[in-house]
Image 1 (spheres, rainbow, N blue to C red):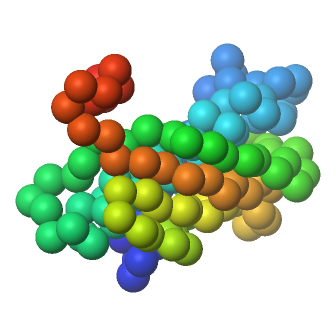
Image 2: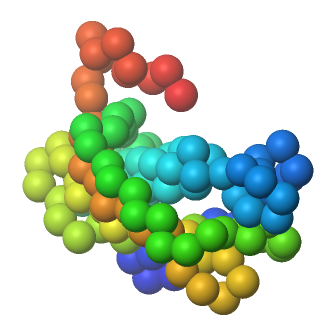
Length: 122
């Protein structure tokens, strides 16, 4: 955590590349979706004064691939809430590699309750 930012570093392996030296766009999407989802769960927990994060699912998300993401070294993920209302959080996230933002994400994540098919599936 860095203030409201939830941060993580991740190091790709050879099987994550789209072509030599460049991270696959699908992997980038999965990283940003997952990191944003956990950011939503954490901030919804704080907003609700809960002791543990709610089970959250992705309602929508959009990825913008700004430039090729190099495979060398770790990538840095950073996400923050831009709107929290009730059981929903809108999150904006970035993926940085080699000191440059290579992809961004904006998505809506929703806390689900018992009875939902995704409830406590992660």
